[in-house]
Length: 471
Ligand code: HEM
Image (cartoon, rainbow, N blue to C red; front, side, top):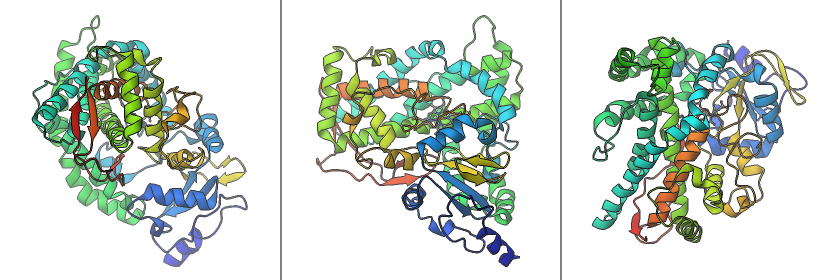
């Protein structure tokens, strides 16, 4: 049996298969290529193989797209063939029936996505502006307290509180108070267990690729992990019940109200709550964390950023997302840090619904497809490994539509649903932080930028910074 599988994994499907990145070993296929830093491993294989390559991850035949034109062909032009998600057993821990926005197949995904897109329109996000304003001011004021005490601080828990507070207001109409610490209250009860769980799923991802193990994993460790979400499910069900009793069609409060009025059932609403908490909190918080670290290590860029902000805005408290036009340097710093530190290096996996072609390459039905966004960011820009905000000074658009080389949010119909919200949050938080503070390492030295691969790519080491008030 092993021999047959070994032969299968080293036999071509056709004369036109994408180049195989490596010989496949029995059982594990090409998994031996993976270190603790898979994005770098896949970048190395992209540099060796070119625009596209194939690799067996355990029992999954997987194709990586490393080239912007091919990515456009797959994610935009042939969305109907490549819009579905593969069955990833460990994700059943979070969403047993795969009936949510992130995991649903194209046919059931389409109407749900169309419905949820309505909560991310410009008008809807404008209505969220007071929440972003309040919570970004809370973030800055909390950091000022640390600054006055002279104590260096790791801002990440507060960056995460900032993004969490916006998601829970938008989806569940929950207000987070200034005094509430990130490890207390609703954030502790709802977000901390989800975050821990998703990290453990990411660590166990290898079990998803060897089919014999994935069943065992799901029915043993997976079931236990699933139980740890029960307390969150109970809270979320209570919130849904309370919303059902108080919903007012003339005065909708949040995404949940809109879903109730549209007739969605509780199970789907629960899954969408999980989607938003998993996809909408850690992502933007990690971007802010990278941007801060990059600014600490590039003090001259930080000075340029602060000069622009202090010149443009006499007061910092009322800076809005709509003030972005004219903030060329700030937009360039945000754009470059999203390029330089790709948070979702392989996007979210897709699957070929039928036998298909990608350019001149054949992929059989069932092939797992990965957009190698990191490789595109590193290989298709001059000096791609360097952090250089100046590369964007003539092109500061943060809209992913129409861009094929700058793809932090992926592209096509299944592009990140929250990209506009992420930009609003990033612009407001970055503007206020760097208007107020000169941020440095405690002893002025450069800090380690090694990435760690989990739900998102984050700095491996948490750092404490000195926040010096400068306005
Ligand atoms: C800097 C922050 C963010 C980055 C870099 C990011 C990146 C991504 C990427 C690469 C995808 C995969 C798209 C694909 O399958 O091709 C995605 C999907 C998604 N993102 Fe984001 N994201 C961010 C922030 C957010 C926020 C704030 C929210 C929620 C409010 C969010 C919600 C989602 C959801 C629900 C999906 C699945 C979309 C679907 O399948 O239709 N993301 N994101």
